[in-house]
Image (cartoon, rainbow, N blue to C red; front, side, top):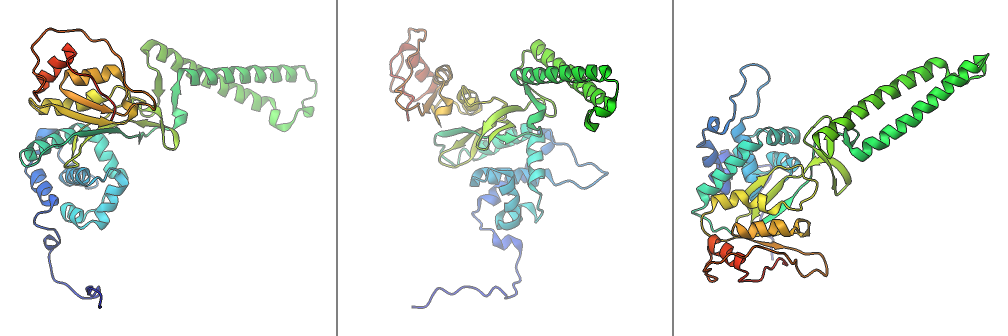
Length: 358
């Protein structure tokens, strides 16, 4: 039996880019939506008249919305899509921003991105049926090396090390003063070298002690010199100075319903705040959120339930749930209702058993 015939790759075609995109493609919906926006309303500045031309912000918003719909999360993969994905090439008009440009655009326009995502979800909400929200965090590297990030313990260690080296330099200088002939001293330990190292150590010591004092006065647990809001946190490659953005993705449409840029080192206690925007945009009905065990936090899950959000959080192995105390409120709760208000009433009356294990 012969194989299905393939086309001749060398044949010449006369067609438009528009013919490559299916009439029902989500790319056309995103294209029409973003083109209808008045970006000035979202705080987007007009392109500068002088200097190197910048990328059209509408194209960048299209790229991010398309990426959220197709599960393309990283800036590198979005950049690759601009080169190999026909739908993306059609939306972008053939321009190919590199991953740093895409990443910088997100960092510089986080507020407008969030507003536009919400607006897109509201526009299509009548045409789709939302499922539950899957919440997760990601570690995005900051523009800050680990050597420029300090904790109190890290500063204490460096101050201790510098104090020891300062004492050693002073000891060597004293011995040199007592020596009648400096020729017996190795070249690398000349007076000039030691004095220079002593000066450098004292300057670094003063700088680190200043950082330590500033941390005590402000009450912060970490300090990053280049990117002040970034924090040292654990990722798949060990530890890095990064941010921990929280994203809520709909289970049915795979659209990002909300996201929140944070510098919290772990995901503990972030479920309710990540779902807050979805709660505000959704009137009446009960919402459900799914998260891994990194989100296990009793107070946070109570806050979810009080706001009509049922949290499904994976518990640690062998742990069946949490015992918590909540104030009892007398009310006539309708336990058969699916409204957020009735869920809160039932919760405050203890009319159902709180389950947090998925």
